[in-house]
Structures are given as C-alpha cells and as structure tokens.
Amino acid sequence: MKRKTVFVLCLLAALVMAGCSRKNTESAVPDSVTEENGGETGNVSQGGETEEVSGEDAVLFSEIKEAAGAEILLFDCADYDGDGNREAFAFAGVNNDGILEGQRWFAGAEGAAPLKNGGEAAEYLQDKSAVVETPENTAFWYTESDGGSGTSSLLWGVSDKVPYESVLSGKGEAFTVTEDGTYILYQSSTDAREDGTGRTVKPCYFYYENGSFHEYGEMAVGQDSFLGLPGAAECFAPYETDGYWVRDIRIRGNGLVQLNLRKEDRNVNVTCAWKDGKLSKEEENDGIAGLLVGELASAEWHGPEGALQQLWEKRRAAEEADGTAIDIEPAQAAWYDLDGDGVPEEIRYIVKTGEDMYGADGMEVSIDGKTVWETDQAVSIGYQLLVVDLDRNDGKKELAVYGLEDSGSFSMLKFFAVEDGKLKELGDLREVPILGGLGNLYRIGVFDFDSGRMMRLPGDGSMEIWADTPVFAEGLGSYYVKLDFVFGSSGIAQTERQEYDMKVPLAGGEPYLYTAQQPIPFYSTREECLSGEPSFLAAPGEQLNCAALTPAAENQIYVKMRRAGTREEGWTVLSDTQVFAETPGWG
Image 1 (cartoon, rainbow, N blue to C red):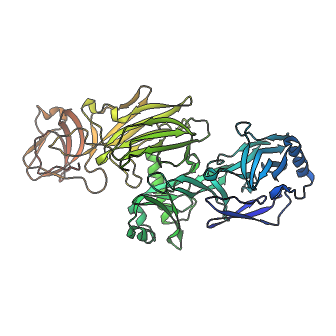
Image 2: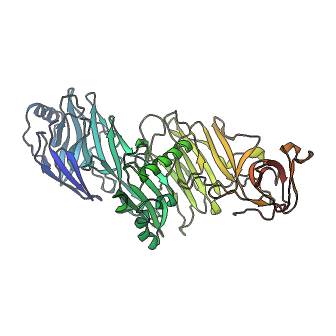
C-alpha cells in the first residue's frame, strides 16, 4: 500500500497514522501533526492546495471534484480494502479559518458519490485527515468532526468496494495509534465531579483483529485482590493518605490496571502498568475510567504473563459463570447492542439530584439521544443503570434500573428490553411475590466482593440472587437465602423450591455458629417437626450452623441446621422464641 506517514503526538503517546497532515483546532486533547517523507498518496494539503497527483489517484480526484462542484479540501487515497485497487475519500466545500464546511465523498470502481450523513445538511470537520492502516493490509479514513466539546473521530473503511462507517466512528475523539499498534479513542464525559459537572477525557484502548476493532476488555477486582499484587500498595498509598477511597478497580486486557477513586465530590482515575515484575503508576486523569464500546470488549488476555494474568483468568471464570451485569456511570456514554441488529446503541442516563445534593429526585434514561424512560421517584441514596444479558443466544442486551435506599435496601429493580424501537418493562423484582407470598424482598446481598455482583445471570432467561432476611423470625435473626427467578412473557416469577439454600454470613469467613441455650429438637424432615419424633436433640451449649430453610408461616421458618461436631443435619421450627444464646443481625 502506497502511503505517506504522519506522527500524531497526543498527551503521553507518540502516535502513528498513515495519511496527510492537517492543522489542528482547539481540543480537550491537544495534538499536533507533522509529515514524514513517505510514499505517494495524492493528498490535498491544508488550505486546499493540491500536491502532485498522478495516475489512478488523479482519476479519482477528478471524479470527486467534478461530482462535488466544490473545492477539494481533504483527499486521501489508499487501497482501503486490500484488493489491489485504490479508493479515495475526500471532503469538498469551503474552509472557514480551519473549520471545513461541506460534504464527505468517496470514489472507487463505481465512480464518485457523497457519503451518507443522514440528510442534506452541511457537515463540519476540522482541517485534518489521515489514512489509518491495520495489520491486515486494510485501512480506514480518519477525520475529526468540529463540535467543540462534542467533537468526535470519524472512521470510514471499504468492504467489497463499498464504503462503510466503522463501529468506532462517532464514539470518541482524538483517535490515535500508538507505536505498539494500540488504537486509542478518548472518551469525553462530564464526570469530574459527582454532580455531573466537569468535562473529562480518558483513553480507551482497542486492537484490530479478524477484520474488526476490539476493545481491550476489563475485569473488576476487589481492593484486597488488587493490593495483593506487587507494587499495588505503593500505587494507591499516596491517594489513600490524601483521603481518596476506591470506587472500583479494573484490570484491562492489555495489562493495565485502572483505579477509579473519589475524594469528597471529585473523581479521578489512576492507570498502573506492569513493569519489572510489579505495578507502577503510569498516569492520572480526572473522571471515571471504563469501557467505551462495551459491545466490542474482548475477554482475551493480551498483557504480560504472571500475577496479573492469573487474576484476570480467575475473574474471567467468575464472570463467565455469573453472566453480564455492567454498571454504567451517569453522564457517560456506553455503547451496547440492545435490539440485536449488530449495531451498538448509545446509552446514557442522568440522576436528578436534589438541592441538598444528597440522594436523588429521579432518573432519566436515553438511547441514541432520545429519552426512553424516566422517573420522579425520590430515593435516599441514588440510582444505578446496568447493562445485563438475560439471553446469551439472542444477540442483544437488556437494561436494569436499581434504586438504592438507606441501609442498602432498594426501591426498585426494573428490567427493560428494546422491542420495535421502544423500551419495554419486563418486570420489577421489588414487586415479585416470593416464598409463597410470605417473604418481603427489600435488600439483596453482594455475593462477590471482587466484582460487587448482586445477581447471577447465566444467560438462559433466569436470575439468581441472595435475599437478605425476607422472612424475619427473631429466634433465627438475620440471614441470606438464595432465590431463583425466570423472565417470561407475563413478567418475572420466583421459582418455588421444596427448600432454599441459606448462608450466614453471605461471603467471607466461617459460617455463623448458633449456640443452643436450651434443648432443641431436630427432625429428619420438616413435615415431622410438628408431630414426629426428633432424630436428635441439640444440648445447651452445642453449636450448629444453617444449611437451608422453608417458610412455614408469618414470622415462622423451618430451618435445616448442621451440628458443628458430627455434621449431622436436621430440621426444626424457629419463630420469635429465643432458643439460641444470640442470633446474628446487621440492620
């Protein structure tokens, strides 16, 4: 492929693109472009002056100029689809002091035609373009829109002689390529502060393989797992001393580790890299780091071997089992395919904050710039939007809205799917009858502290949660019970079982030991509890732990318990009568 190479210097990276140079306008990510001698491209230099164009390129240039009837301001030729024939992308119009006004064009085997932009309105670009090569002998045409704080990188390729817009196009800004072949797209959002103010730009990382861009994926890890890595404590220590606390920590598939930190209402993210056998701080940016185009995220590991890879693979195995449930940050664009057409939709939401800046007075969700759902219901803590995958085989994702109240209870957990271009509510978990109508689902436990997961979604239309004490009996105290749900045409329903697994506590440490303060009869089956003969008696001072339960009536529970010494199991009935020396409680 004949080309001319440019170097794009963007923040800390020396970035390489193939194409023509252009003057820069003001941007939140300052860059500069300089030419280096290279192969013949037939590009138009800034200001519209034509460099030497000959042969096939000259024909393409003439076709566009004649069809456009305007001055050619940007012109980049290359063999974009790698079939041995050259194509050209161009921009024709007028140059208004570095801001180009006009239309984009393409010329190939079928002649010249304008690129579709959704209408007849003029387009506005910055005065720069480049040919971006891939490792697979193909290329993309890069330009940058002029939208002030809303600027975005535009990428077009060619397939079977037809131009197409890359899935990355319009989803970030200042598209660049590092010397090691990593593609970077900068995410712009208003997340410097918790109130949704303060514009930030953060790098998101991609690679090109098998004809597609892939975003280096991410795996959430807990603070303890992170601090167990060599060098991690040294990376975090200055921020901990300065009063920052950890929002979340994520390992990226390229071997980077990103800490999202908060101090008062300020958000910062710190990127660490693996060097000389340990983590070292690379850079700090304002805002919250995360995936940009989640639909392109890869589960493959491309980083160094060793401790990081081992932690990645451990977290990946857990995520494969637990399914997709991804937290989306307010005021940040997330891109996922919600309707199964293969094209990710832009998902955003805002939380309506009260005058006192505590809690939330409502929430608004938009898809591709259009509001699709909103509520004015106030909650004492806040709202969270999640992208979930209820069915791994249908090619689309769903949304979940979680309203959080004091003490970790929730006001709603609504699920939505996109159908016929509209958002359809699938049900609200808060309103689903549980445990034969005897239970109250008000709080869900975090069963995986490395990821913060509250639900398991295996992708077969079911869901598993650990409910916090849905039926309270003072003689048992607080506990967690595993409940399963299915999504159907009539909504969400809890799967009824003969007995339900339970845990005390939910995660970490040894099971809670109940100490009998009086003789307690235990039976082989729960049916025998009221009229049968006990299989054993727990003597005062004997210790047991919980295994399973079945609700019996209001404030009354059949509980299967296990003797700490012999591991023998039996059923008993617990109510408000105190039969143990003490019972667990956590609010």
